Image (cartoon, rainbow, N blue to C red):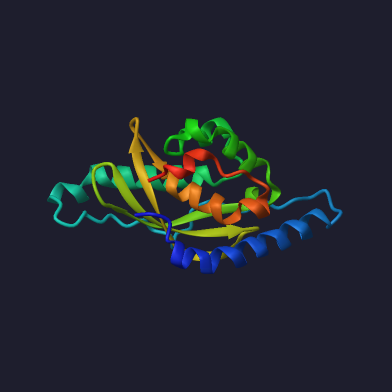
Length: 187
């Protein structure tokens, strides 16, 4: 699965507008105190273990529960502004092709205000999963039910490059980030 552009466009423009307003308000508050969005999982955000269509019964076994936990942890870490860029690159499919974009994303006050909370994960194969997630800014949910892809690459579950590219393409001008050429070939 890919970033749901039909629903994503409807959500992303207001999300980016809200993020810009929140960022401007935070920058103009004059206080030295800052609030960081919480990325701690809530008890109501249970991940789902779903076997792929036509899959074997082992698809919903303990191995897939571990995969789902890794996907959720890695997804939320990728979108956490406290995660160092070097670590983020290891959590993004083909991360080595996105170094400049990840650095720019982390440096953008608008983009760094965004975090993600995983609602559910559905394994679609041994190496791919569909992730349903919410985008938050300043602790408030600004886009519910987005859908993206996680991939198993080099033994690590990672945010699909199509998800990152979709977000970059939608918000590049507002975040002053150049969309990398690698996004032209993102699955």
